Image 1 (cartoon, rainbow, N blue to C red):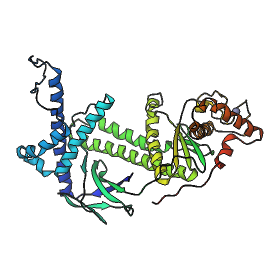
Image 2 (image 1 turned 180 degrees about the horizontal axis):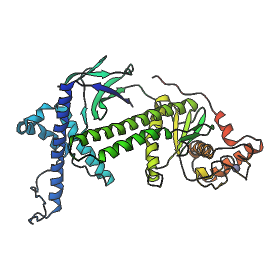
Image 3 (image 1 turned 90 degrees about the vertical axis):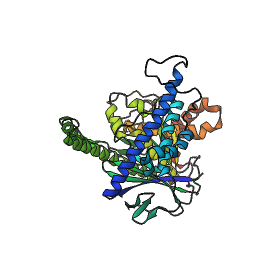
Image 4 (image 1 turned 45 degrees about the vertical axis):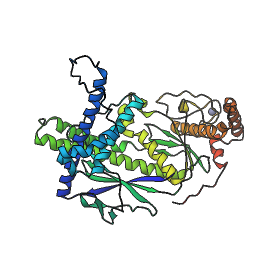
Length: 431
Ligand SMILES: [Zn+2]
């Protein structure tokens, strides 16, 4: 298995290059829509009976007309270039990947049953993919793109040794232009499948962004408040402009820019947090919550703002790159269970502390409820990965660990405090 990383850099095309890129985006948008039209026509023509005249805008294609598959449409591109010479302005590989993109969306729809590809409105096509490079396109402060020439790039982070540039995606955002450079290396990262080192359970939530089983609580989240206030102001201003006017367009750009700004800030924060977590532990567990269902609840807006799903993906990625174990555990009832004796401890949303009257955990000294549920996540992570591997005995697992924890409690050691010393030593790999 090869290792692929995506590095994002800001690029600064000059006015001429910017005009060319915008033109390419527009051409790609039209060809995307054309290909989608063909696909849609084919589908609707199969919906209506061949010997009928369609009364409702159904279009009948010849029965022998093949399904416009990716290869079919891609092969038609050279012919189409003769009819529409402007297509030739765009590098042919970019056009091909553009068609590929439509078919990826189509396959996605077929597999999942929703998300039929849509026509893209003016300005909705925002990225171009350059799928292949014969030689290294990067020269210190410039990137060389086919048919466009050298574009200034801010290489704020060097490409690591041993990596080859596979593809480059150029993206237009309100903040400016960006290049996502995919780099690949043949080095083999060991898939971390066994627990090792220090164990760490995580609990994410709204009152505190994140709590770990080591009693670390990350507040976070509220620092977006001022950003959202600004966004609200800008959106209000936009709503008061006449639609389709120049001023409205300017205001719209400002709103988009602010959205970008918030998304960048959040991602930056999440990456830093993920590295912090990796500094604190070696085997990391998180709950398997579907955050999309959570976002449908009454705190939906705040859940979306926090971007837990994205954080989980980022953490998983950072763990992989840094050689840490990452595991997901069953989320049900983690906040209602005592991590020390595993008894059920009912809490309402307003109970901020965990107090267990069964074993006395949290009676003498305060234990944050989020920390308690992070400790429970940690317990479950260890059970499912170490004990759960011994097949079929899973039924008695809970009891086994319960006994263990009770023993620990009698000796005055909480369960989660002793476990992290079970194994040590971290696997090494060459990066
Ligand atoms: Zn207890």
